[in-house]
Length: 113
Image (cartoon, rainbow, N blue to C red; front, top):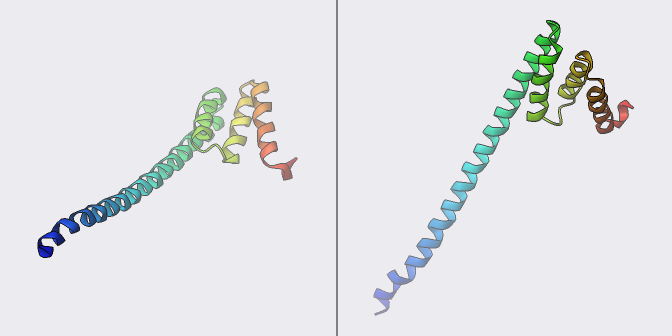
């Protein structure tokens, strides 16, 4: 009877092993997807920033503000994007918003103050 009991005892162990392997696989997939999302956000932000720079050179500061806002939205810690947004806001006459953005940049970079 003990020979017939061993397969029954192995079933729960096999189930636990399958669950552990499945959890590890899902963790790997989740990390890979998160990395891809970060990469996509970085690429999108760079594209918005480049477009905003072009618009600024063309004198279209109000439209550039939209692009720089999008860049900052995708990469909120990037101070180049923040500075560009502040510059575009000032150039488009939105001095209050420009001052607020530039103050934020200074607060986040105390060595610049």
